[in-house]
Amino acid sequence: MDYSSIDTINIEIPRDAEPLPLTDNTNFGGLVLNVKNLQKKMVLFQMTQQTEPLDVTWNQIVKGNIPDRHRDYLIIIEDQEPWVKNRIGYNYGHTRKDLLLVKDGQIKNKVVSSYGTASSKPKFSRCEITKNVKKIKNLTINRDAASIYITNVFSIENQNDIEIQNVTINTPSGGNLFGDAAISITNCTNIRVKDVTINRTYSQNSKFGYGISMNNVWNVSFDHLTGNGNWGVFGNNNVNMATLVNCDINRFDIHCYGRNVCFKNCTFRNLYNQFSSVYGKVMFDHCQFMDFLPVLFESSYNAYTGFDLFFKDCTWQFKQGQRYLIQVGNPFGKDNEREELKEKNWPNLFVSNMKVIVPENVDELYLYGCRTKSRKDVKIGHINNVKVNNMRVVNNEGHLINTKIFLSDKVIGFKKRITTNVCIK
Image (cartoon, rainbow, N blue to C red; front, side, top):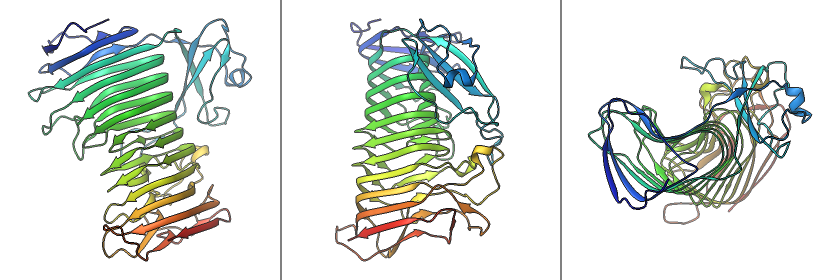
């Protein structure tokens, strides 16, 4: 579908409105779309397809013994046993999901964490995929300040090979709307988002709402994404392999369950990056954290899995009152009911060449910071290596200052002997 002959459209959502379908190649041609919504919360543009049950077992998948090898499809895995039974302070938990891409008779990727454990009850479904790339590009959406309902822009579900490029979403400031998901991506593999700008979201400082919401995705990349919102521009679950390059945002998160995230040449402002139940590696390469907490563990899921955390050639200007690189939540609370999550883990930490800009009268900072008091009977697992090479601590004028660096702000017991190597200037 090609909108290139149209400059501007003003629309008001009717009472009986339904989402407009996105084709495999939707070029809006620079269209400016002004949207007023006085009727109901809805999605404006949608790309989806049906799923069907898949009769297969986890052991068959591990062995690569899958049906219909002549077909290309996605295997959607949903654990029928809760990953987190009840999120602390909320009336819901978390269901882990994974996605496998089947092409040319072979499974092309791996899940975040095995479903071969005694706690797991995987349910399988599938959806067909096509060989062509689905492209969505060249659109500006202005969501009208007079709207009393949210108009989400894109909902993309059960797809492989998606490109979203040159899209701007403008949302008015103020108002009392929240619960936004301007771009929603669900059960998708190989997603590329480039040159996208999200100016504000329908959210409050104390009420959620996202510019980009992802659930069960594999291999997603963002290049030159600029985004902000009161609550944080991202809200994600079940994310396996994400890359952000040349982005300027106020938060990236994996609420619960994910693996392998890489940030390169990114700037983070004003809030924090939030993770829970993450595996593999999280890498920050040539990134800036401006009045920002680089890594925060969302304690309400009580899911502290082990991973490795890297900072290379970064600048960290930390928030007043938050003198720690990693806020590790509350690993000293009750045990998680899920066997895989009973152990409380901290990441190994590798820092190479970091400039730390501190406010006045700060003479101590911490690599790991706890929200609550530690307990002698709880030993932290996974962590066995902390290496900090060439950390330069300066004041706002750029002058080197003498600041003490501690591993943690609490006395902690560890399951393993930790090798530490800290070199500061």
